[in-house]
Length: 387
Figure 1: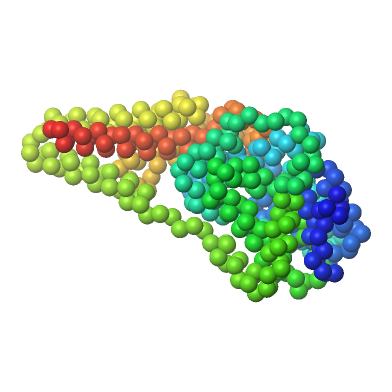
Figure 2: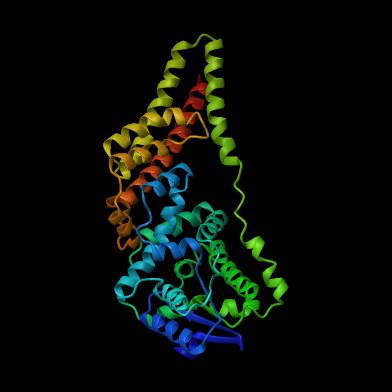
């Protein structure tokens, strides 16, 4: 395993490829730090992933409220779905995913060796991948992650060649999401190499990365150092948000107010009442249905349904936020809920677990409200055209 998963770039840089679910990798990391004697240990982690490893109970009500307010529920659900498959593999092999990375951090700290986080922030990675994918790719990836059956029996040797949390998932789905593969694997290879090159002046470095990144990182390090490090700023950029969704969502209330004004001008007050009823009913039913499908609390269903006809008239608000906040208050998650959700060894936790349910209620409430607004707008437009 050592000769296969260790690459010496030169006498001052060694790259160690590990399996995130292998106890052998944990032992290998410890022995390499002890025997090779690095002056710096670089690990394939960002601060948020390190926190998830060291403080699994840290996802509390305050964090959830922030997630709701920032509209990040769908992104967190995607990240959790990606992580769940590797966690389940880790549980089945008797080792926690990321254990060897945490072992590297702890072993370095015990030996007073500086630790460098060299991975790109996982949220940036997910957003860039999500932005790059088309609608069909997004649907296929979510379907693959959540619903496709997994193999219970597998050899750890099969995993060693491609073990990273995100790259493992996306290598399997490259054919259905080729544009995301570049972000989740190729870009991160370049980013890891750039960060390693950036800290080369700090001494003898042991870089601990997922075995799936080993060839890509090594190949990138063959390029001129300035060329590698110059890409870091570009690779760290958040994808620009498209203005079209906001324009379209703003166009719906403008259209509605314009239609009502036109009908009032023509004295069609009965039609105005029918239009208002269509708007309220479709918005309320679809938003409430979304929360119901997420198995939200009855009060969250009611709040989501009431909020939707109003929030759909304001692009800065979302019915799912109100439903999610209500769910958070009436069924507040505990520390154990956070730990269980972060373990996510079964898909049903998205609905059964209180943390998962808050996220699902928020996301599904927003989706239902959006669909309701579009259906209502289309229905009203149709009635105006045929009227």
